[in-house]
Image 1 (cartoon, rainbow over the protein chains, first blue to last red):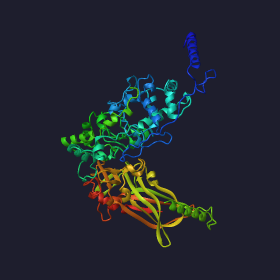
Image 2: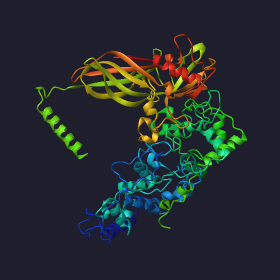
Image 3: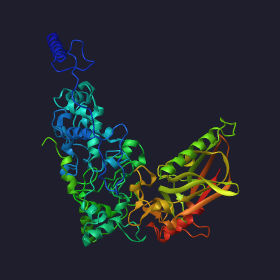
Amino acid sequence: MIPLYKKIFFFGAFALALGFTACDDEPAGPDGCANCPAEQPITGEYNPTAYSFDYLPDRFPNPIIPPDNPMTEEGIALGRMLFYDPILSRDSTISCASCHLQSLSFTDGAAVSIGIDNREGVRSAMPLVNLAFNPRGFFWDGRSATLEEQALIPIEDHREMDESWDVAEEKLRRHTAYPQYFRKAFGVEYPSEITREHVVKALAQFERTLISYNSRFDKVVWEQQGWPTDLEQEGRDLFFVETALPTQEHPGCSHCHGSSLFTENNFFNNGISDVEGLEAFADKGLGGFNGNIYDNGKFRAPTLRNIALTAPYMHDGRFATLEEVLDSYAQGGHGVPNEDPNIQPFTLTDEQKEAMIAFLNMLTDTAFTNNPAFADPFK
Amino acid sequence: MKLLSRFSLLALSAALLFSACGGTDDNTAPDTGRITLNATATYGSLPLVMFDQNYDYEDGMQFQMQLFQTYLSDIELVYMENGAEMTEPLLDVALAEFGDIYTIADAEAGIEVVKTDVPARNYTALRFGVGVSPALNATVPPDYEVTHPLGQNYWEDANSYIFFKFEGNADLDGSGGFQDKLTFHVGGDNNYNSIEFTGAIDIAPDGEAVLNLNFDMEKLLIRSNGDYVDFRQVRQAHSNTAPAAVFMGENMPNALSLTR
């Protein structure tokens, strides 16, 4: 039972707070209270510049751009700021970039990511590379159909930013600078028109520009600038050997990591979990999202571009090194019914393993990890 | 160039005029009907279901499926006009993918490959290729949107799409454990098969014809002379030339049937 004086105190404090809010000097929205001063329009031009992907090499497919979120320089610039600004988290300590570091191909080097108040996440931060070409949903389990949908989630995730979208929107509306940027990007006329939809559209635009296509592999194989070393070539042959003799053991990496993107963004049980049955996966992955038991334990095959930078590996970061990854695949799985049949045992000599690693290192793109257009705009 | 353009414009105008004042007095009767091509997969008479269904194979072996998918190219209807064979294109390429078929009901329903309006006619055949036609096989995934059927399933080093995939798990010794993984991927122009099913396909104005194309895995794996892909000997072929791949490529036409 709450004493009466406390009730009066709390009620008074609440009323006072409401009063301060209503009579704040900050402009209120058009739908604000009657006594509030009229909301001031955002000044400045709305004349966005279309963004061009004309730098993309022919070996890359066309990016997927939602018709309702065309790419503009202004939208990308805004998305870049929002990506690096911790303003979207409850206590302004965590930004997207906290778990997605450019130097690590936008991963964080942790097995599972650490969010607000040092709360531990459940999966490893995915690399943010070549997202513009993914038609098969985002996250390890594909649960968000678009980048825009994906960007809605970490803000309210209690293990990540733990902020409510209502509050995040209000922080942006009251910010001294952001309304101008939202006007430039989306043409909003009043701060109150800034919504989470604008935020995730801007974030998605920035993320679609995170394209890696300048690795040593690209230069040597596609642009014929130089030659691979013998070791790299041996690794390449092992990686891509798809037309092998039927009796020849081979890693078969390109089954799941094919194409110039080194992924087709499909989902697989890649044989890393030794579980009793399809219900026994600690993390059901795609099956946990779509409810299909045969998809339990399936996760997206991520791109291998910049793979040398994205340790530890797998959705839960269980492997610290690429050598451990190769050793796991060489076992050929554990006989779980929905393991991909292409996960088959193979043997690699030490030299072949070294060759595989040399080839994978060819996929490191320092032009990507050092691209100033992707860097923190506040530094 | 300008002269040609003016001539073209004149011809177009004349064509429009004749078209507008044409002799037909039937401006409302539909002159198109609909064609639907569905695809199903079976093992003999059994609907092909992923995972749960055990299929009895040769010499005491059994297997379960995880994936069957195949490209179909240059799908067209054939008809005769003034004694000459003509074709009505339906679709340049489709990927018939059975990997998400988990129930008998879904297997029996099959998947829709083509559903489109065509001129109402008495067609005489359905023609298509199993695999990716040589012309399309000379292209590469970046030529397409990533959502296009040809935006994936490509062998970089073999310069070919993977025409079809057969994947599953085998029980080779009757133990009840399906521990031996089967993965056959077949591609290459040499494994492309042109197929034609002749027979009346009559499409009346505003009418619809529904065709069902069935892929019988039993006939894909076992020839009429009794030869078969022996899973005890080979469980993997990713190739356009490996014997098991060629065996299946050659057998594919035998595995097809069309019902109207």
